[in-house]
Image 1 (tube, helix red, strand yellow):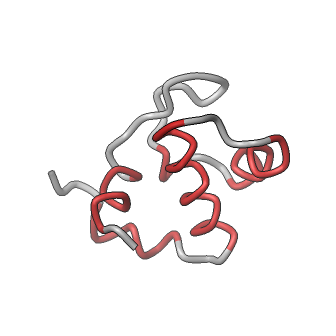
Image 2 (image 1 turned 180 degrees about the vertical axis):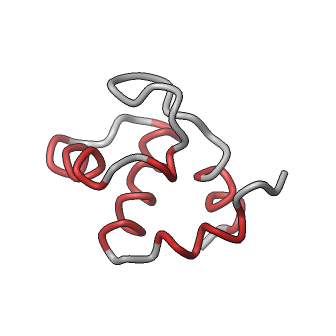
Length: 71
């Protein structure tokens, strides 16, 4: 797994939708599950949402805690 992608999860904000402006890492699981069912958007945002869904689904969100606040 690319560490740079993990850093993007805790620094990149959701650019659209109900949770616009919220960090990808802070999106609720049910929202990520919706994307998993309906389809992730194309491009980088879709890849980040899919990765965050995997982390959330497998209970691995705490792995992101050490990355928060780092730039």
